[in-house]
Structures are given as C-alpha cells and as structure tokens.
Length: 272
Image (tube, rainbow, N blue to C red; front, side, top):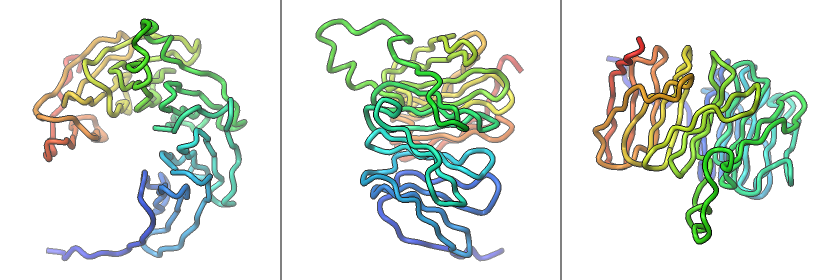
C-alpha cells in the first residue's frame, strides 16, 4: 500500500468556491474577503486577484485556461486574465446584477458566459467583449406573483445554471423549483420543468441534451431538454441534497446530503 501524505497546504480566509484549472495542476479559489487565489500544486506558487471588498461568491475558469470569470456579493462580475493578473472585463451597475452572484458557467468553447444571482436574473455575456447579450428573467418562466406574495417572490433566486454541449441550449435552476431551458439562438423559453422543492444544483450530460437536477426534496432527476420530459428520478436521501457529481460516461451519480450520507446511483436511462 502507498501511504497517503499531504503534498501541499495553504491557509486563507473563509472559502466560497474552489475549482481546478482545466489544463494544468493549478487550483483557484474565492474567499470571503473578495480575493481569488491561484496556486500551482504542489509547488505552492501563488497569485492573488483582488476584487471588491466583499466575498467572491462563485467562479469558473474559461475552457482556454487563460481567463476566469468571478462573481461577487455586490453584484459585480469580473473576467480576469490569469497571466497578467488584471481584469479584462468588469460588469457592474446595470450591466452587473442587483444582488449577490450565486453561480457562473461557460459554454464549451468559452465564447459565452452565464451569470446567476439572487436578483432572479441570468445574464448571457459575450466573453470576448464583456457585453451582456441576453437576460433571462423569471417573468419569462412562469406567471407573475399575485399581490400579497411579495415575500415568496423575494425568496426566489437563480441557484444553478449551465450550457448544453450538443445543442444551443442553456438551463437555469431556481429556488422556487423551476428548471427553465432556454434556446440560445432565439433567447426564448423552450421548456419549464417544475420541481416541488427548490433546485440546488444542475449538470448537463457531456454528450447529450439531458440535464440532471438535485433539489431540496432529496431527489435527483433527469430531464430530456429537447422535450422537457422527466426521464427518471433517484431517491433515497431523507434530507436535502447539498451537491452532486456525474461520472464522465454519465453512468453514475454521486450525491451528498444533509442526512449526513453520500450515495452512489447507477443511471439507467429509458432513452438509451
């Protein structure tokens, strides 16, 4: 047996997110003090990208590995040049969000960025120009709330989002349980898939127009993005699912839950 040993460690403030670089042994992380850190592992060479004086709440390295998009609690979005250590684009005010960022995503070639926020908007950004080219709002997903439902509507937010790799589609998951699938060419709503509880995370299958969701009711669901049809669901947790991951061949789903358990589900799709 090979003894496990620590090869690298570093101490920073409270962590908000972490992600490995797609092309190198480099780790990026955002912290509550607004900084984004980048380390070479295991050498420990470090670079810091200083944001506004508020938490760096989410981030994603672009597919080319040269830039990273980071969202902040004050609603701003920065696209950083990882080599130069300077922001290439800064979206704030009307171009940014009116609430903390919750999630960011990029498409397969890195030309488009999606940002999501507690302001219930998902913004489509041209990565080359830094310009907002589309806005997906909850009023395009479902009916407007009735008078007296302000408290419920204010509790809604974008919780997760992502791009399909095989079709020009994007998915946005909301705290109210709505999964919205948008056509990127027309920027129109294609399907609305409703959950009884809030969506925590969504993931697209790498080579198919199938999107996976996990929610506060403790279930994982598979949706056909072409039709909006529920393909299957997997249950077994007694509390909310906090996060999940999909194997590269989409044969396994691994979940972690508030019931203090992790589960592995074998995916059996009826359309296969």
